[in-house]
Length: 158
Image (cartoon, rainbow, N blue to C red):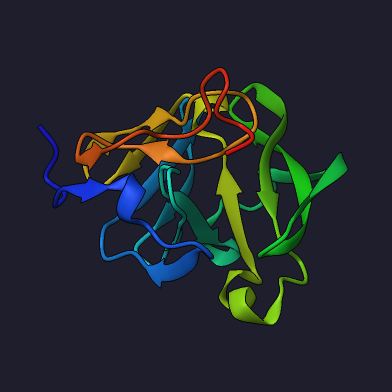
């Protein structure tokens, strides 16, 4: 059972909203804590699990490496991909950031999000998260979420 209050992903806003996170966020890879923050942000969007963003100063120095590729979000702007190193592991395109986000998402500048499914473990508070279904979206699924989370087969286009 989750210690977080219940939230229905179908009630999240569109366009998305960005808000501060009151709980501790952590990312582990290769036995190393590569990100640990109490100053995270999350983006909430209809039918998506929340996407959590870490300030760069709360990420282990040397853990992030520029990677090829980018994608475009109609709300946030152009995302830049990052490889992530932890312990003996280096995982390709396991994180992303918005170096120049749109004005509505300016708070995301200087922050990085991680694909939880590519990491050893990710946590919101003491709860280990699951990754949002599919291979495109980067939301973190916690036990408090209800509703249909986008990302599984046949849901990418809605």
